[in-house]
Length: 196
Image (cartoon, rainbow, N blue to C red; front, side, top):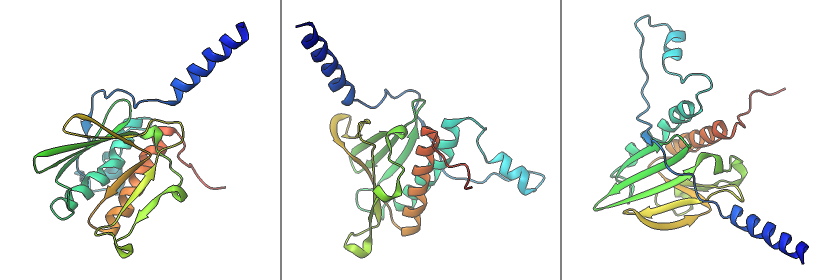
């Protein structure tokens, strides 16, 4: 009887731990556009230092990387159906938030960077050559991790196993996919350092 009770308690805890929500949003800030700051000295090394995030600043490094996605969305605004005024945000819990104000509605997509599957073999490329009007990609979330949450106008929306991004050009798709993957690898501390 005691064993059965312990088993049921453990099973219930396991069941609830598998159904996780994304961490609460704390201090979400726009990542901003990708800009290159010039220094007075004009030296490349000084400019590189001025344009990089501080070592160990995970949120700062991820935000710098995600500026590529913000710039790509800006280029897609008004060209890709459904893509309006898009703001890419990142919070203290490493939640990536994409707010898309199109027409009278605002769609909010949220995923934690620690949930994103960084294995490129699990990415689905949506090619305009395959019949899609515009190119894009679907990047999956890791099994057992919080899913991608998509809501419209603040109402609780749907959960998906992937983050879908549609942009106006193939180069923007390639650069944005790399940027999201890099941000996720930084968040997960799985960034490859070098090759032996």
